[in-house]
Length: 64
Image (tube, rainbow, N blue to C red; front, side, top):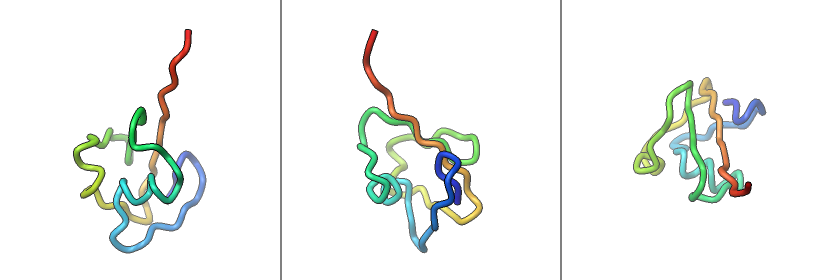
C-alpha cells in the first residue's frame, strides 16, 4: 500500500488505527483518506486496509 506516496507493507488485519500507531501519528488533529474517501474517526478501529490501497494522512497544525 502507499502511505503519503511511500510504499508501506500491509499486514493481515491492519486497520487505520493500527497503521497510525505503527507510523507514529497521533490519533487527534489528523484526517485520513483511503482511495480518495475520508475515513471517519469512528471507523479507524474497524476500517481494514489492503495492499492496493492509497492512504493519505494529513496532520492539522495551528498557527496564524
